[in-house]
Image 1 (tube, rainbow, N blue to C red):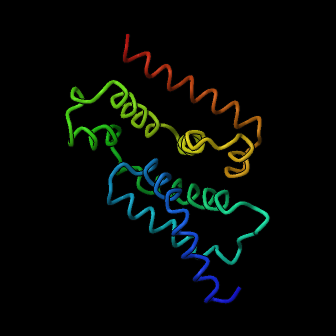
Image 2: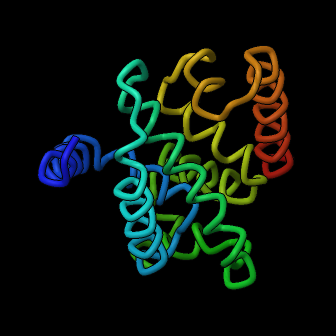
Length: 168
């Protein structure tokens, strides 16, 4: 593929699959300015890797793999700037949590709890909530199929425990 074809392919990928980048960025960066920086970093890495794309894989799998690897690295570099409850605080600026419906409150809490997970756990939950199959998750993250099921089960239990602690 020559440079012009690469450029066109890149533009098509970003246009058609920007939702993947946004979902990953949102999962790792609750603040909008950090999200923009992360999305830019993901696009740079996609551009730098475009010549390595293997058509035997789905483009979404390839994009998730790059995006999650970039997000995990970005998150580790910027972890000292992230506060533990930044996701919840960001949302409560708009509307007090008491004014939200029960479903909205639970969704905000779920986002908060997911933001507190370890990097790989966060990646697993992003893909799980995107209804990716265990096979796809294993392929994207480069872990075994049985490991995917085990880890998702443990994360679900951890999240259930967090919710139950609030209701106690």
